[in-house]
Image (cartoon, rainbow, N blue to C red; front, side, top):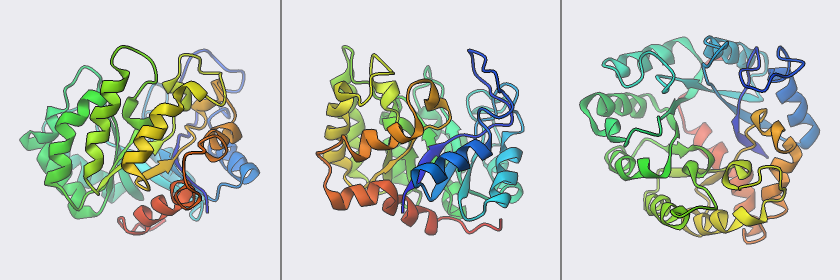
Length: 284
């Protein structure tokens, strides 16, 4: 079974440059079509209530009800673009979100200029404690420097699984690329820390340069540390500006030759299936 750990879906395309089909370019029907075409059985939709899609949690919840055996919702709660970002009451808002939407996880985007210390503040501790009690997965968008504070949170909440988007924001090039990889790898010592093996187009200097050979050293070093605690993701439909959904799959399945066959099976779906099956039960 292949499970895509990182998809988006919107009623209206939120990004520039404009597309000629904004009402369908990022629709759930497009996602299901690509899943069917490329042999992906299930997908988690990472909600992002941005720009003309401030009701994205509702849109995805409705999609999950239409495709209950194909889709899971990771609801957007207090991400950096929201008015409630890191304001008091986050724990209560998370409780309310879990009551409203059929979410297996919460999604939270952290602003790059933050240092991650909010997760260890009283509000952040309460927020993560509620997630742990509810059995949610913590699907978090971070930069490498956020890992310093997040490791404290991961250790404090051993029954909360943390799933970091797109290799935790690593890059294959730049003055601090190796130091950042080493910092993210430090987080692999915690069994409840997971890394999304996705975002090839973000790690490279040339986002159209499939199969991204220049970025493979990052994936290999992280794989050596995280092993099966990695999960493949496509970043559909955002990835369409750089490569196809199938190429996002084959960049890992075909071109990451350093991964064993058994671990490829886990990273393509086995690990995420285990996380989803052991997360909060929802009614779709």
